[in-house]
Length: 273
Ligand code: ATR
Image 1 (cartoon, protein in one colour):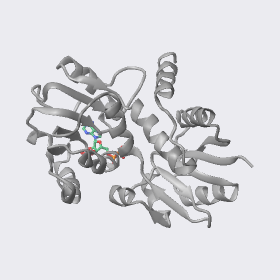
Image 2 (cartoon, helix red, strand yellow):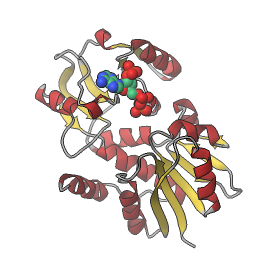
Image 3 (cartoon, rainbow, N blue to C red):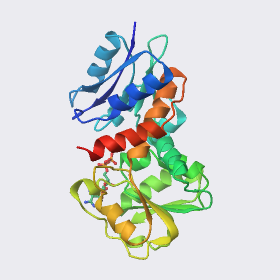
Image 4 (cartoon, rainbow, N blue to C red):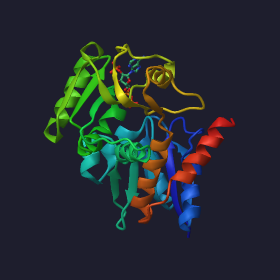
């Protein structure tokens, strides 16, 4: 029987994950069925139980269920425990639910693909919500000289940085505390959704710096337009989406798909809409 997988979200209709995983399955010759499933806002656990009962072997989890999914896992990877959220669920042989998060690895791998060297880099991360919490551990593991987490609500960034300080040089504060230059600035706020730009100084970017927005769309986000205008290399989150999916696929099927062609296809789909 074909193994079933899905992505849970609400809303979920526009998810690109089914297309990505269909491409991975074709490429690797794995016989899987991957669909988008809308879970009720107040009963993620019920939706997950029903999916397992119907033959589900694993799932991706997106907004707004990453924290709810975390709480129902029987076992968790170390990185998921630290992130406090999961984006990947795996059904074990004995039916137990294992949770992991592949978002952070996805970000770091996409940066590698773009030739961004994180060793010794001065990194600024904007935002202090779940999206940022999920990427700090792999960023710190990549060997930067320092990470500053800056957020509209500065106290949240301070608290978040404190949670990760055993892993490297990391500090948190409000936007007013930000002084450049940085080699990499990652926008992990949801400000791009509303077309807002966090209040940041113009001298933020070092020579040859990279600006990364974890959001993506047909058009560059306001943050990427601003950063590009200041000379930084702008990269959106489409590659991160594909890389986190590849890492989830590896957890489920034991095979790591190649990502470049899928990324290019997705970009074309996005731009022809
Ligand atoms: P997610 O899970 O996507 O990270 P979240 O936990 O709601 O979502 O966090 C959203 C992040 O975007 C927060 O860091 C938020 O800042 P506050 O903590 O001060 O609320 C940030 N954010 C949202 N809208 C913003 C805006 N217009 N300008 C700057 N930051 C914004």
